[in-house]
Image (cartoon, rainbow, N blue to C red; front, top):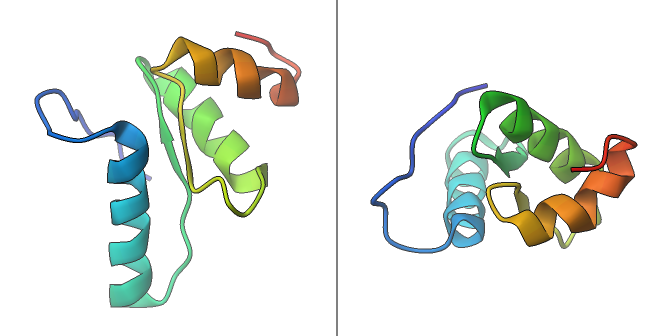
Length: 79
């Protein structure tokens, strides 16, 4: 588990998450999930949703309000 600041990094958070997951899988063989959020709590919640989401959903961006509303309902917490 880690908490990183991606402010100023080029690309969308979803693309960054996809690239991070691919790099970790390639280097270690370990599957991962990635969640982004404006707070550590929302990032952890997004990561939880990413773990339980459809396999095509590689990472979740709770920094984006649309994702919070779309996936927040899955947690029972709303956003």
